[in-house]
Amino acid sequence: LSSMQNWTHVIRTLQSQRLELLKVQQSICIQWQNYHLEANRYNQQMNQIIKHNQPKQKEYKDLKHRIEDYKKQITEIYEKISKLSVKRKVLEKQMQAANKQFTVTKMTINSVNNTAKQFKSFINDRKQKAVKLVEFMKTIDVISKQYIKS
Image (cartoon, rainbow, N blue to C red; front, side):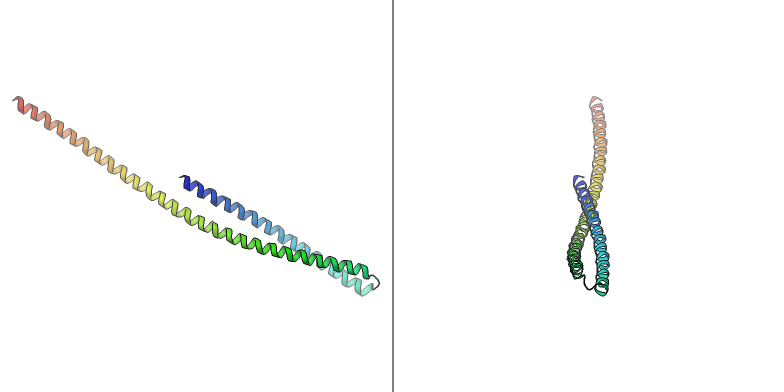
């Protein structure tokens, strides 16, 4: 029973870790989308500045630098997503293994319980037979005492 509780605890822990990883992964995806949208907006602004305002080279360089920063951040986010995906897959495999082990343990416990029930039934049957044998022996004893007296 304690083994089942341990497996249940392990499974619940793995499930909560998996949910946390999914939440983090979703948050990172949203951040990635936001950075991507922001990068596109800055890219459009940069193209407009280049077309209409050649003298604003400094602003162009700043925007270009921001875009490069966003690209770096997007790359980092993508790497984090990849790592989280790998971790999630590992956790899912661990959960599957834990579920299989849990099932095997549960089947073993059920088998042990059934064997115990059969053993109890066997013991009770033997007790009943022993009681009948004792009664039979008492009857024989009574009959033999009466026979000896007569």
